[in-house]
Each structure stands twice: as C-alpha cells, then as structure tokens.
Image (cartoon, rainbow over all chains, first blue to last red):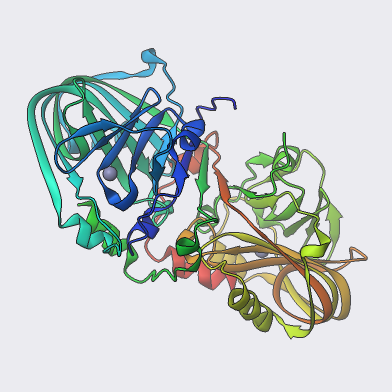
Length: 240
Length: 240
Ligand SMILES: [Zn+2]
Ligand SMILES: [Zn+2]
C-alpha cells in the first residue's frame, strides 16, 4: 500500500454514533493500513483515541492513557498518512484555539475541503474531555456526552492532531474542527475543548480525496433506520 | 490499478454545481481509472453523461448522443467498476420506477449505504431530461434546470445506470436515486424522470467505500464561499 498523503480515510460516520451504534467495526491494524495519524473512539465510546506515528493511544474518562493493541475494534476513526514536511509548518505564539482557527481560514483557501491540523509545541493551557465507556444497550451520543470527564492542564507540552471538515460534508463528520491532544509524557489528553498556545508549530495537510468506509458487515448498522431530522443539532450538542 | 468493485468514486460534488461552478475539473481518461460505469455531466452542464463498459456518452438537450473523448473535462461524475455477476441480478416485470425503488429498499438492507443500480431490458416508457449547456458566467443549477429538454420514448430497449445515496450523505450527493438511461441503439437517453419496465434484469452493487475526490487545483472551487443555507432545498428542486 502506497502512503498517499493527499487522502484521508474515515471508518464509520459520526451520524451512526448519534443513535448509539457504538460497537467497534474495524480492527486497529486494518485501520493503520490507511494512516499513521488521526483520531477516533473505542467500542462503547470508552475514551478518546489519538494516533501518532502509527501508535494509537486511548485517553479514558478515568484519566488513564493506554496504548491500543492491533486487534482493538474501533467504531469511528479518521486517519491519514502524516506528511512530514517540517518546513511547511508555521510558527505561532500566544494564540488561543479560536484565534488559530480564524488565522487558518483567513490565510488558506481551505473552507470547502478536508484538511488535517497538527500542532506541536507548548500550551499555556489545554482543556480536554473524555467520554465514559458505555455497555449495551448503548445510550445515544447526547446521553453519553453528558457523562464526560474534563481534564485541564497548564504549561503542557504535546501534540494536537485532528481535522477540519467543510460544512458540505455535515453528517459524514461534524462541520468545523475536531481535534484531539496527547501530551509528550503520554499522561494527559483527549478530545479538545479549548487551548492556549505559548509557542508551537502548526502543520496543515489538505486532502484531495476523502475515503469514507462503512461497516457493511455490521448488521446493526445495515438495519438501523437513521432518523436524520435534527441529527445535525444532536451532533452539535454532543460535540460542544 | 486494481478493479475494486466494492468502491464508488465521485469527482466534484452536487453542492458545487448549485451555485454555478460548472467548469470541468477532471479529464475523462483520469476518471476512467476509477470506474467503467457511471453517470455525470459535462462542462457548462452541457448534457447528461452515462458511462457503460468504459465508454462515456453524452446526451445533449438537442437530443444528440455523442461519445466523449479522453480529454473531455468533467465537473461532476460518479463511477464504479461494474461487477459483472449476471447471476446476482433479479428479474422484474411490469413495474414503474417508484415500485422498483420501494421493492429494493424493502428487500435489501441498503438504506444507509451507497449502491449502484443497473437495469437492462425493455421499457414500456422512458422519460428523461437533458439540461442545456451554459456559457460563462454560469447561472445557478436551479436556473439551468428550468431550461431542460424532456425526452419520452415508448417500447425502448436499453440500460439504466445510476446510484442510490443514503440521506446521511446529502450534500455530497442528492439523497435517493439518481439514474441515467441510454437505449441500445445509442439514440435516446438522459437523466431519468420516470420509467415503466416491461421486463428487465436489475443488478444492485453495494459499496463499502465511497471515494470523494475534490478539485483542489481549481481556484473557483477553492475560493467559492458555499452558501449552505437552503442548499438541500435547491438540490431537491433542481433534481425534480
Ligand atoms: Zn473527539
Ligand atoms: Zn443526472
């Protein structure tokens, strides 16, 4: 398999998590054929996944950070092959998440496309969350989101990775930024709620191809009647 | 390139046609690397494209049917490699378009996924349309759709090809069926409005992977600010 860095691969869709289809449907080693960096979740939404340099970490709601094994089943993940052109990055200083996202969309014509965001450096503060793992029968995403743990750390050194999805593909993914964090010591991370950058380098990787993979062998997915009315609203609520 | 029959490839999106981004952005020979069957349009929406056995035909609003050359530029197309398992098809008799689509979704658990539909046989009647080619500055899709030619033929023999898109991916493609037709004599076809089947064989091809390709090298696409409000409504109107 060639490492095509202009392509992003997504397994599952956010829309199927909303009604509670939380079983893992792809093995991590299969997912890793499509990327060495990215984000995702685990069966039962048991934490926030972050993949860096081909290693997948799970940040659980207990605060525990663990490395996931190759046979771990994943219900929803987005991965890509990180394009390691360090010279393409740009330096930023004293900037919060909102200021950075404005800066990006003001300086790059990327509002209609998918792109990856990687931020490596020092954070004045980092606020993340990790949802609590659920057992069957699974609740809806909105119910799970209300049971999340919040983590906050000052002066954290680490890596942010995630994606910008254009509004065009709402449903497939939540429109806007979806970023995860892992600190350098691998002791703190999760789904990012907010951050402030002290100094860091930002890397953007635009994608010409979006590869959306669906679990056709999963009977729950195939037979579930998705209620699309108000789905965008529920996604927005759960992602806040 | 391997011919993966579990994958559908789309270049461009319906959503970018709506505001009038009608320039071709992929060469036909490049598109043909991703499929030998499918549907699409031409620069300026100058007709309805149908690809069968690797040959792309364009049905223009004048009624002319022509074979497209390899260097033709296409703004929007969906293609796949036709899975020639004749034994997988099912026979139908005396059925209209609505009855067939009901039959499919009642008998196959395919409402959440993309699948191709191919219908080969005899049609009691076939009603199609072809939009009229536009010159720059391009009008919007709704304006173009009001300038379409309607074709109607009784006792037509030919092939229907197209796709079902789940509601989940509205924006990327219009939810529901999008079918094109070409008769056996290659003299009549277009974007299907309605049909009645006398007797035909129906082939369904479900896809595990949807590959969405975007024209990152097209400045109009990159710089256009899509107005997503009411986009679904406009797509529905134009597709009617
Ligand atoms: Zn997340
Ligand atoms: Zn059409």
